[in-house]
Length: 267
Length: 307
Image 1 (cartoon, rainbow over the protein chains, first blue to last red):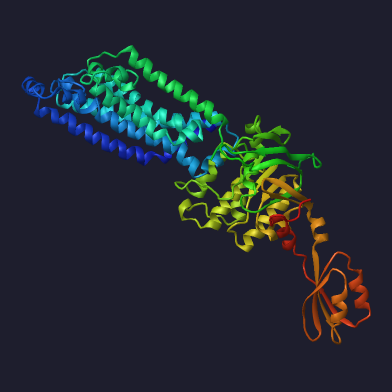
Image 2 (tube, rainbow over the protein chains, first blue to last red):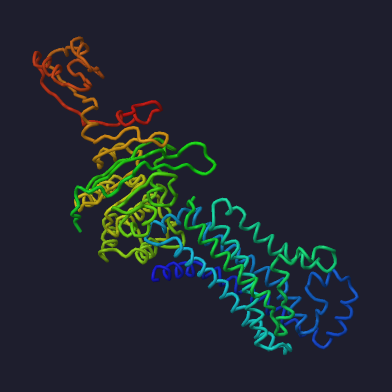
C-alpha cells in the first residue's frame, strides 16, 4: 500500500499547479456565470417566453426551453454543456498524461523495473486521476454554492452539491474511457482521445438533435449523454439509468484497462 | 551482503524468442545464455540486433513469444514483481522525471524499492559527485547518467542489468563506475551489460555474447578472445631490423618499420617470432595492450564469425 500511496502522492504533487490553474479558471467562469443571474432574476417568465419563440433546435442544444428560471439558468449555462465540456477535456488529457506520457517518455519502464505490480501501478494512476478530477469538482461545487447563495438563487444547496457531484462523475467517466484505451493495448492507445470525444460530444449532439431528427433518439440511447439530465438533478431527481450507466462505464473501463495492461507490451 | 551461491546462475535465458505483432521476423530467436553470480556478461551486437528486446523481455516490459527467462530462480513473467526486489536496471536512454530534482527522484524510487542500507544512495551520490539538488532538466547528459547509475545500484541488487552504462561519463567517473562494478562482482552480483563501447566491455566483462539478427552467434570468455586476438610488439634492433625474415613468419604482419624499430602483429603461436629474435640483437621489446576491438568487430559484421 505504501508504494501505491507513493505513486499517488507523486502524481498529485506533479499536478498541483495544473490543478490550481484549472481551479482558478473554472471558479472564475462559475462565479461570473452564477453572479450574472442577478441581472435576469425577476424577468425569468418574460425572458423564457421570448426564448420559447425561438427554434426548438436551440433549446435542444442548451438542454431545456426553460433558460431563465433558477434551475433552467444553472442547467443551460453551466451544468448541461459548459462544465461537462471542461471536465471532459480535463479528464481525457489527464488520462493521457497518467499513462501515455509516462510510456512515451520511458519513465514507465523505470517504474516497472521496481517491485510494483502492473495492476497496482494502474490503480495508483487511476486513483490519482480521480483525486484530481474530484478536487476540481469540489472547488466547482463550493464556488457554485457560494455564488448561488450570494445572488439568492432558489435552488437548494444539497441539490447544487449533488448536481456538481453527478456532473463530475459523468464527465470523469470519459476520462476513465480514455484511460482504458491508453492502458489496454498499444493498438487502442491511438483511439483514446477520438473514442472519448465521439462518445461524449457525439452523444451530446445526438441527444440534442434527437427531438428533431427522426431516428436519432434511438441511437442516442446508446450514448451516456442521453441519460444525463442536470435539469432534473437540480430539482433533486436522478435517474437510476444514469447512475447505472455511469458506474458501469467506470467498472468496465477499469476492468478492461487492468486486463489489458497486465499482459501488454510496454512501448 | 555476500551471496553464498557463487556458482549459481542468477540469470538464465532459455530459448527466449520474441516476435512483435505485425512483424514477420523474430526480433529475438531462441536466445539461450546464463550469467553466474559474480560474473559480468557483455552483450554485444549492432543496432537493431535484438539487445534491447532481450533486456526488455527479461524485465517483463514485453512478453516473450516463446521460451523463458529466470532471474534468481524465478520466472521473469510470472514472478516479475518478486524478482524486481533484487534487480537493478539502467536503460540506454536514461529516463528521469523532469519535474523533480535528482534527490526527489532518488527518494521517490527509494519509496518504491527501499534500499538495504539507508545511507547507500547518498554514498553513491558522493562517489559520483552527482548534483542531486539541481532540477533534472538542468542536468547534463553525464549528470543524468550518474543519477541513472545510482538508482540502478542503490538497493545493492543481486542482478544488475545495464544498457550503455558509461555513456556520457567523464574518464574519472568511468573509473568510479568500474570500481562499483568490481565491488558488486565481489559481493556476488550477476551483471548483464549491453554496450557498444569495446574498451568498457574489455575492462569489466568476464564473458561476452554476440547477438546478430536476434540470434546469439557466439559466446566467449574474455580470456579466449584475448588468446585469439593478435599481439602487437614494437621491437628495437641494434642494427637494421630483419624485415624480410619477419614478413616470412606465419600469422605475422609488419605494421610499421623505421631505421631500427619495427612493429609487428602476431596471431596465435609466438615461438617463431621469438626464435627469429634470438638470432638478432634486440635492444628493446614492448608489447602493446591487447585490443579486442578487431575481434569484437568481426562478430558485428553481417556474415561474420558464427560459432
